[in-house]
Amino acid sequence: MSTNDTCCSIVPYFKVNEGKCEEFKALCEEFVARTSSEEACLYYGFAMNQGIVHCREGYTNAKGVLAHIENVGDLIGKALEISELVQFEIHGPAQELAQLKEPLKDLDIKYFELEYGFRK
Image 1 (cartoon, rainbow, N blue to C red):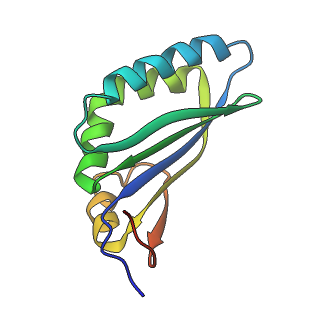
Image 2 (image 1 turned 60 degrees about the vertical axis):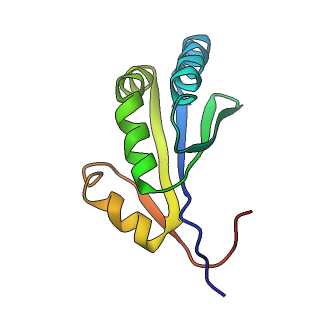
């Protein structure tokens, strides 16, 4: 069984620098406010556990991922001033991931190819 789902999810984990948790939380509010206007965003939010922050986010397709990165690029820069990106994955079907690899080639991303499933 294969899938016709085009959804791509970005899976970043940040380790927030000591004493910078409140500053990072303020940035999360900015990320959420800015991302809420993106048409291709299916879901978006932040989960936190002992100084590790995960951004849970999904987009209709690869174009949505690229539009999001362009939209929040300056905020990502601010986040990286007070945290370390310890893990960065993108999950999606092969045809969508193929559209991301060249534009994002300078980033250390692990790509996970969706092979089976469905989306309602």
